[in-house]
Amino acid sequence: MNKIALAKAPEATSPNPITLICTKKADGKTNMATIAWWTYVSFNPGMIAVAINNGAHTGERIRETKELVLAVPGTPLAQTLIQCGTSSGRDTDKITKFGIEMEAVDGTDIKVPAHTRLAIHAELKECVDGGDHTLYVCTVKDAFANDDEDSLFGWKGYGELAAAQKK
Image 1 (spheres, rainbow, N blue to C red):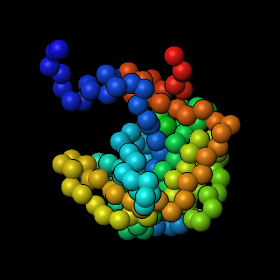
Image 2: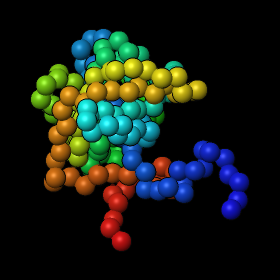
Image 3: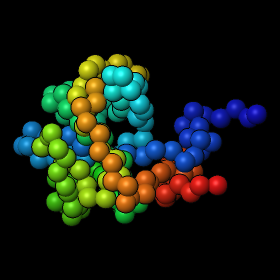
């Protein structure tokens, strides 16, 4: 084995999940951020955790509103992931700027992009210091799936975006 930097580790675990976190902005509109680090924590009770860079606007929105929707993108959303990952929602209405078609999620006024494969509506339970990121541990309120969409994954350490294929 060869010693590598931790930042290169995702290349060894491809494909990796890549996701949009949807939150409510102060003006009531939906904000979206591209993230890669999330996981299921518990099925009983249902819980997930997401890690977000400490300076990110999305973390501020989660701490203030105590709510988020994790949106696993379908393959038509590859460009949306790139666009949302390269700009901040602090001063940008990404949905309008990038022309993203949105759809409602039962139980919340936070919307998700059309072509979402999986949407998990969750409520903030606690924040955990994770160095340069904060881990947001959340209780799942509801989960919704669209079986007509193929999930999008990051390949080559998030250098490429594509569906996973069965081998």
